[in-house]
Length: 193
Image (tube, rainbow, N blue to C red; front, side):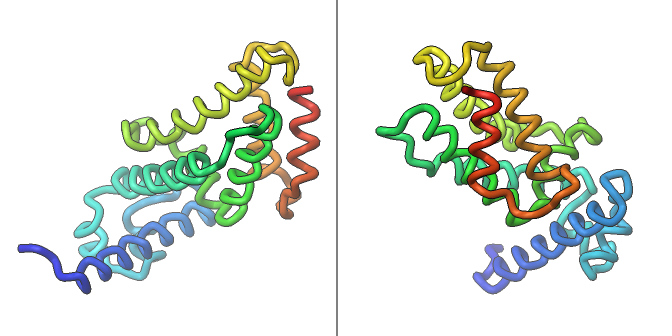
């Protein structure tokens, strides 16, 4: 039996509350503190309702990873790159990623942390979106190195160095203020010039 549009919308709303509740638990108790009991409390549902939508916490975690990485990929894939230098291409992608991450830092901290804690949440869906983002950035770095726009370092090493600094700047630094274009420009100057 097909769901009505109202039922579909109600389902989406409840799933969004569960995801929000999970991120709330993550923010207050860390990934290790995420349990179905805690998710149910934080989302305002009984456990039976929670299990109706997600059979396990791993399913909730996988859903968050899939939706989060897909959202990031859609932002990155929408960046116009034609007619720009490799430096401008990279800067535009970093700006888009930075803005997206700053909209919901808990979500993006979760995206990078959850797979380290829960290796069982491997999923071809979220991993493919993550790979697409990384491949896009790495190909820009590779071509920029080949054209002499970036320092002559193996692109995969440059990618790891930039990724570490970018994550620290946006997610794990003590200063959780907004990251401005100047901050991203400084990051690029330090690692690619």
